[in-house]
Length: 192
Image 1 (cartoon, rainbow, N blue to C red):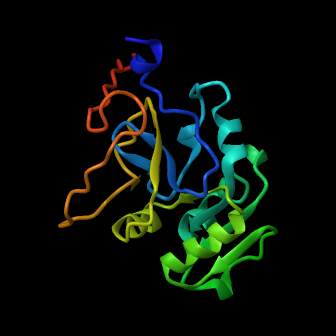
Image 2 (image 1 turned 180 degrees about the vertical axis):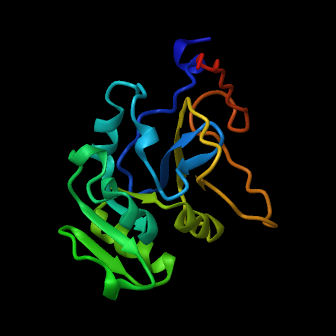
């Protein structure tokens, strides 16, 4: 086997006009704390160049209103390194606080994706909303799900995917051996 065949990391992200549902997620499946808290996301080591990879390949961001209002980091993702159009899907754009570079949309999620893809100009659209991501996934509008699993158990918060009574959605792994192979993750609890 070659080193590439055993490397569990996916290939580097490319700017290909994809719709990416992109999150850092706790090991127990949460992408934000109970009130969209994001402080827990600090203190983790990421692969060198990972942030630059997303900054270079992202053309637009599609976010939800609740998270946008609660987490100022959504205004300028990647610590401000990324500069581009942010679209916030909301049922009440009239009471949104105007923010430079942010457009508030009140439309169908599929229309929001079309608008964001046009603005992305051939680069990727990153979806930063569990609710919008779920709706787009159900409509076949998510090209890839990019997750960075952080070594933390939150126990409560906003889940990546919550669809009680829904049908399971099978996924194919990008890169690596076997698109249906499971990913093995092993952690040890830190002493208190």
